[in-house]
Image (cartoon, rainbow, N blue to C red):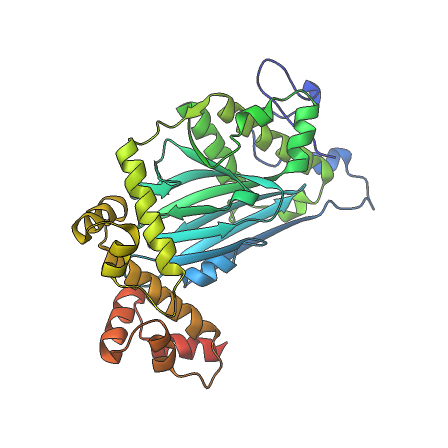
Length: 358
């Protein structure tokens, strides 16, 4: 069903059918050579969306169940470019605000994330993500990712059926993709080649839909992409594990966030978190500052403000802003409105008006 390319010592397909490993552009001559008139077009989908809200952004990615909480202040702006063909999903998303992402993709697939540009390090599975690394996880495991202020990333979701076919053809693909959420450091040249391949594929200005309709074009591009992925993974090694102390502090911070999120209608105070985790408020504040660059109070307040915004966008027309805010622990309305505006760049009433307009 799927063609593939493996650029190591043991090829996985016949070489005469594979494109050059560094070629990810659509060959304009292909359709003229091998697509007879009246032949059935190969299915695919391509979408380019602009977003103005972190929730809208999270919902823009097809078949993913995820939540994005905005962490840094200011109006949100993002873009999602998404391509589906031959069973794989390739997408590029850009965001201009720090975001805490968590959720899961569609079932029975493996995810590879490749940063394209970032204003600072991110945090994936208690490890720092930078431009020299890629991250991987399986759909059943889900993910959590804290992004920097400016973040541009490409993701590839590969179905298990494709991986099984590659393995049956002799590729050691299962050995190259870790069986748990992981951060990998590839060879820089191979990583740059993979980035260049994927950014050219997802360039909305030069995407030619009439060419991707041809099955042979899809086979060529599919093989090139898989080939670059294999070459990158073959020359990658696990990122150095963080010091035990950092890992333990990160675990404690995640435990505090999980506990707070389990009580949205009764948000715990910092003192309650300290009691629950058996830690002093001074240490909890230090850990939050080190891992997330924010105090526990401000970080958890931002998560609650995101919860209010999410409900305002989905609430019935007669729902009162003050009631929704109170359900998330905000009892002082003027202060709540000021904090909401500082984070999202608009008043709660503006969010409601946008919902009513749609």
